[in-house]
Length: 98
Image (cartoon, rainbow, N blue to C red):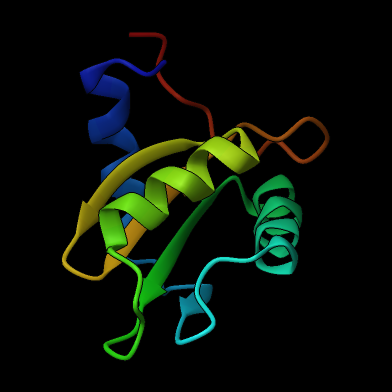
């Protein structure tokens, strides 16, 4: 569980990032979750964009992705979600202690 200061810091880092994944008509499925899991291990902080033609609610789908990948949902703004998970092998981001 991240503190508010840690969330603020990660939001600041995520601001210039471009979405790595897009959720469309097919929605969130197992292969999609596996790909996000793999990319989170490499990058730690990613954005996921929900296209206009998706049937998924961005907040609900982001919560599901977060739970299934073991990541933290940092924020959902409009149709974009930010996810963070500390990498075991490729640590790049040093999150403040508190």
